[in-house]
Image 1 (cartoon, rainbow, N blue to C red):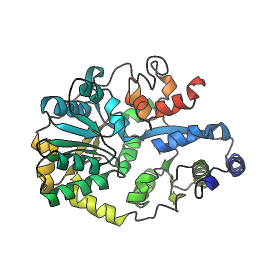
Image 2: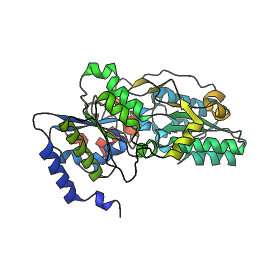
Image 3: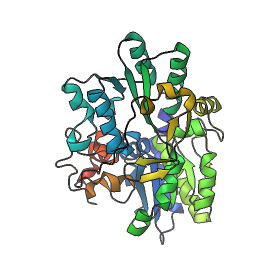
Image 4: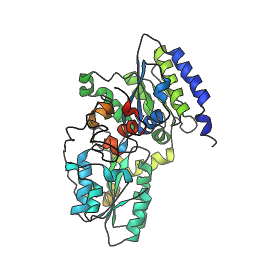
Length: 375
């Protein structure tokens, strides 16, 4: 498979790992956070921790849109489907994420609510067109990668003058979350999350480009290397971060230059800017309220905004006290630090969002056998 096999070459991987080992200073530690859940899975799927020196440690960040959605927003979606009688469309992973009292969209569906799994916002729009007597709500989640398709759906609904389609917007922004991780008083007080650098997300960066991370790297003096999802991408990004740290630099570098440019996808950015604006504040699971980290639908598209149409309340719901998803999403704890991990909480019986989502850190640890390791 061209463009894939060459990024999975075992011999070359061992050469890069040897280069990392040669460049690492034995008298210091390197704590590197991969923000994206796709990177977390690549790291464990290909056994990258086994190739790294002991003083190079990967810290798993909150880079999964399913994992960071707070319980209150899930309860909102369940209420829409059950109490408002709408046809609620959402992505597959969202169906099993527990809301309050372990209730989920999947359980609501089993009790008769009209909840449908879709692969895209276009699918939800088509369902609305095919069922003009039903009110259809698209439960939109995701980072900058999935926001442009939602914007296109809004514009298509406007063009079609579609009255029975609405969007419950939960799109969030990556750079704001990275800043919050470093600024959070709770993280600083815990003092257990020394972060020296970041592996920047791949898919998100194809849309926003590498430019948004430049201010972040300069302001917080943490290097960022944007990387692809293949094992050689990740290893090379680690080497680039180690080199920057050794040289005392904090810059944005782009390992994923075959897909990411400095300016990103301008067409996608334009359509998002037409339909969305910044929220003053938005709640993230694990991070709490993060200023200017989420998007809301602009007034021009208010007719299709589910939050205005249904007057959706802001619910403040605490996570399950026994579940450590919040600390895991901040990089404060690892999955095996949670008492529920691998016992009560498994992929077949998930208690928290990090185990539900296919990109969650707990799912990655469990799927690739890392739960057998000692902490």
